[in-house]
Image (cartoon, rainbow over all chains, first blue to last red; front, side, top):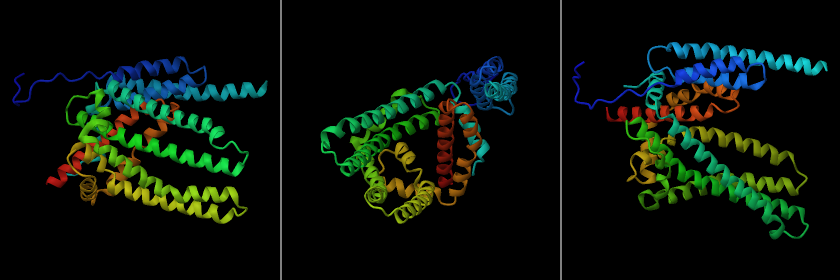
Length: 90
Length: 251
């Protein structure tokens, strides 16, 4: 496409935050059973998903990261409660 | 035109794309330097106790700890006053489409013929002056039986200080950004400029700050790890807010 402005052409920086969010979201779901990693990674996934939004909406990867991150946080919380019950019962 | 919070935040997220490694790195290095200095100060206090106060006088020892802690906090404040201009310069460069250089961080130490050393010292002495009544009252609390009056006074003083601090931050909070943007300005010119820019925009700035509460909550879920990315985001948003204020002033 012909560019009408006199601005020098600059490559748009790649948005790696959405990809990072997706990876962390999936990892948070996997590690949710062992206490805090689920919370930390899930929180980071949600965070990165929100930071990846630089256009009108979230990209596919960003949306996946957001959903898996939220699931990871919830699973992490459930695992903490379960471990607390098991620990209390012993 | 006054830009909405949404627009400022979107701009900040766009500007930071591809620059997160530098922004996070600069945050880690600054934090570590602060922590190192704090550890050094605390270790200095502990080690010097035996040398400075060999007599087993508990009150003297307590005054000594308080005094040294006060001195340590002043050194830390002075150091932070020197780091902040470089830190802001880094974000100004990012938000104005310039190069994000890691070395910007040390800009405050060497630029303008050591002007920021003087400004840092002035601000440190100002904060020390504000904290002096607290330090004196803590000493009074340590030696007297009277607890109620000093405690009530301390609480009241802290509430007043917080309210005045919020008002001061909303009115004069842009002065460091102004200095980083216009290094030729004097401190008083920057303070006056900040006051001028913030007129009619204090509430907007306050709400912008509050809008990060949700982000802070998520950051706490991650045990603070997300702060590494949240701080650059907040800083960039604030810089865009300042740039918008400048634009409004020009109009």
